[in-house]
Amino acid sequence: MIAPSELIINPDGSCFHLHLKPEQLADKIIMVGDPDRVNTVASYFDTKECEVSSREFHTITGTYKGKRITTLSHGIGTDNIDIVLNELDALANIDFASRTIKPIFRQLTMVRVGTSGGLQPFVPVGTYVAAGKSIGFDGVLYFYAGSEKVRDKAFESELMRQLKWKLSGIQPYVVSADPSLVKQITQDDIIRGVTIAANGFYGPQGRKLRLPLADPELNRKIEAFEFNDSRITNFEMESSSLAGLSALMGHRAMTVCCIIAGRVAQDMNTEYKGSMTGLIETVLDRI
Ligand code: R1P
Image (cartoon, rainbow, N blue to C red; front, side, top):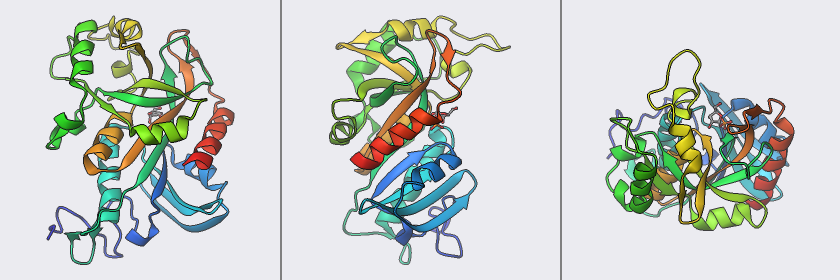
């Protein structure tokens, strides 16, 4: 039995942060950072079954062309993904009445649709990029046993070498998204890239405002990095823990982003809603 302090269930029978009840969760999940983007995804639904809001977690479950889909916001950061993934997995695979793990595993399919900064000339503003691989600057995955089984050690060593890594206490890890899901969503018109999930928006992505950076050359080295014919394509803030935790749990997950800032060309599209809508439509059709 999982103790009440470990799996916190609200008096109404919902999980602690998401405030969702097990019956409100679909097998197909579209995840977004911004709570308001949930309304955009759900605006395509043919039917709406439920809507729940709690903190930055906004969820709507409904149907799209006969498919039952849950769309939910996870807020910003890999630490939020730890909360969201564990609560979604608990909703699917733990019996809330007996607080025991269900005997039959229920697999979830999760696609995060996000915004991102491009790091290569071949991913300009407006491009869609899937994170085939994610480089985690965060440490979430290290807290779980077996993380080494889902990490790409060869890629990690090459990364440390080429980036001449000098930030003590941070050990980037490399994980893959679910390959069959990446194929299903990207088909032949979305780039499969290598995405860095940064553990912050400013310094960790090489943005200098008032504070100087510990390694001002890091972004230049990231842009120049090349391994097995792949380059690092973009920065966002959640794909690593999403891919890593899902792989450990046995779920299918991936991230696909709309590039809204060109970090090399130093351009920015603050009017990105149109291209985000296009990506949402594609994911709804392909999930
Ligand atoms: C930062 O502005 C946020 O935008 C990106 C980053 O991953 C981070 O969450 O994605 P979303 O637009 O999905 O939130």
